[in-house]
Length: 182
Length: 157
Image (cartoon, rainbow over all chains, first blue to last red; front, side, top):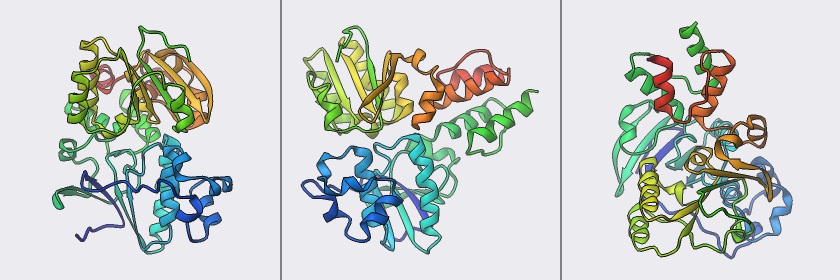
């Protein structure tokens, strides 16, 4: 199935998470391991550990590190275990990676991950595209997934007669509310 | 780990691993499970407390609420282990871990007053809490809101 976009968000239950149980990190990240670990913000000490010993956050980072040199990087439930700070960092990293002509497919239902990086969103069921959009503020998306909180706020405000621009950062939204209220 | 039997807990952690889970091994732990299977399992659940180990990652907000209502109906208390700051609002008591250390704990609304600590670790605050706190600095709001509907209602009506 050909999907358009550079950083693509896919909402689907069709894909399985990668599982490297029983493997050492050195067996999972096989190319330029030190650089790859640094890029995903993991310490070198992790190299000798088993995948099973890692936290879910570290597992997600290791899986990304193992795919950093793929032409098409496909990540299933990458946001599991990640915290807000990570989501901001990886949004920037994904943009940097795609600037080198590569493609990233995020199969993930955590739309907070999509907010600042994804350019196309697909809903896929049983290997069929059932919905596609380029706009994370598309109301149809809420039929399939929980939309990001800032999107929910802006759409909910619109329902209450207050039209706000499609802000993706809290600071911008805050300034807009201040302008309206003052 | 001292658990008050009347409270529902959320454990917010940036390192959810075996070491963390072992602290809660006295209770049955549920891992990844889809919504329907989870409902079936909980309908015949005999324990008085359950631990959700990142189970909520796989559920929609409406599904989470159905699960929690089901537990409430059966008088089953819960511990939610999560890295998602939005999930903290499902508990009465919040324990925040940075790596393997507890950095702050207490009643959820009290812990969420520790804005600097939460942001320094990288968890941030739940969106409605964060926005309403920022709007208090601008003298636009005078209290903290915990859900978007009430926040929007107060702001625009």
